[in-house]
Length: 632
Image (cartoon, rainbow, N blue to C red; front, top):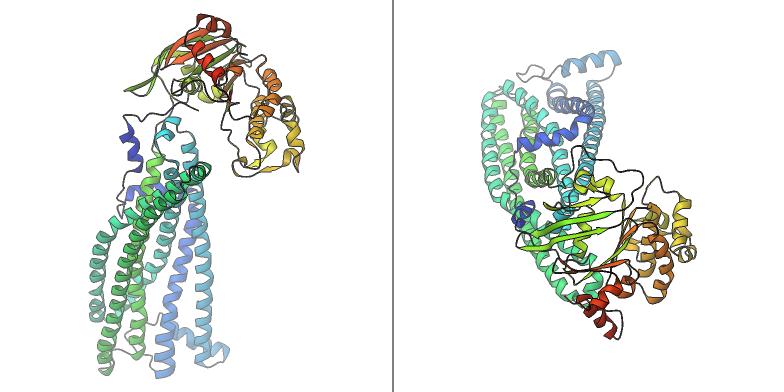
């Protein structure tokens, strides 16, 4: 496409697609929407929750075995204690009698069984949890990709591709980290409540003293959240800017190298990268301070237990095992709170990422599709009519002004004009890539607005100057996965446009894989492949948009015969700078500043000595004969 894409007045609306989002820490509505993708895998999540309950309870009992059974019963010889043993001492005594072994071996067997239960159930819990999350986010990523595929060209004119890539990749990955972290927290809070219950039943005073530290952790978390909320938003935006800059530079690498912009582009990327590093360092510093603070609280809690518990042991109000159990339970008391604080780091990122993802999914900009689309016949005559069409990408910059032209079925119409005159815009409108309110376009006397865009586009074959290569083989790039295009049909199409010769010389012929952007083919070979692709699809309308502008003279001679066969029986619209191609058209239309300046045969327009005549003379005065005669 060659027409310039002016900025639109609603650019501020599209800028909202990249708005700096806050990422509220507990956006329940957003979490509810994420759950929608988890629902198909809820059975796995339920089993995972049951397993983590078993694992958590078993972990608590293991601590009871160590403190109450090993220390109090076996080492100290004390069985009477206000601290519950959950029946473990009685179980140990029963195993002593049944197996005829000493108490230490019976306790060791119980501990071993509990340890195996914790290991197996914990592992299965993680497998089921991560499996459900991965599957759910796979579906979310597919839905997001499918949604972005249906956004109109006007959307991609205004939204950088790098920003969209960030949503599909980085932002979905952030949701994965959040959901996995939340699942892990569940496994930590179950023993938290079990341990808290046992601690309260043993020593209410000591438990309450330890619980006083929990609000301190909560207060620290509150201030940490306030300090990190802004910095994590800056981190996400800087990563998105890095992706955008990288995508732009890599996709335009030839231009970068030809214009010797490597150093300048490197400096621009370095500036963005430094900003990202600065924000990342800031977030790391905040997290480090927060982590050190919570670690110190654990040490304070341990000191309180030793100080208070020692006095209780001396007064024989608490057993030695009970004090040890308090120290073990203290970790269960504080670990989930500390992990929750650490998880806020991930949660901040994920909330902002989730907002960005759902902002993209909720972006409802699309081409108007009729509620009851008309059906086209199996084969069209190919008549195309533009009737008083006006169009502008922005109200202050009209592109097409009252354009009217009728192209008969099978006719070849050439459209010429300066860059920005509206040539490619007409093709965009014909393919319904944009909606237009003023004027009408008809295909075989059917209003395009009454047709579904998919049905319409299947009848139009477009060959652009920049032919897009997809990953896959030569054959894949001809058939494009269309089940109606067989291998034989693809090969026949390639033969017709004289592409079979170079394809057959490739190592694997039609099964030769193409590298990124088809760089293992020459520009001419890629264009020949483009002609084969269109011919294999067999559309009734053919559009050649600067299709031979980058073809060398030798290759152009090869495809002239193929082009004639390709255009036979089809309505053809030729947008070309070369008047040699234009001369073969039935009629020529000259666009000037979006207005139909002239229309007629090549000879008629030369005889009228108007704008076309002037452009014709300019080309033949050009020594090279290759430059465009249509100045900007």
